[in-house]
Length: 81
Image 1 (cartoon, rainbow, N blue to C red):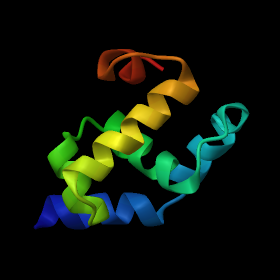
Image 2: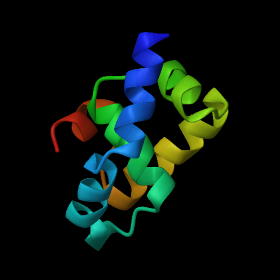
Image 3: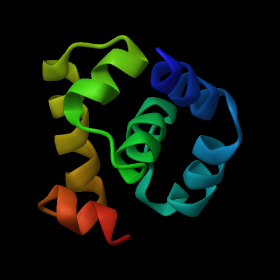
């Protein structure tokens, strides 16, 4: 439960806003920025889903949208940004 609390704290902190600013040229939505911030922290799709209270399927769809907007094709490429 502590890791969930920590991840929820991340969503409340300024990091997602910082990413929104950094990737504004890609027009990521606020929710996509949240997902991307958690991905960059090394969370799995399941962990992201639990933290954001979304289904894993929704997380996968949002990740595909993020990948398309960032013109990348994998989690590894996303992590290198």
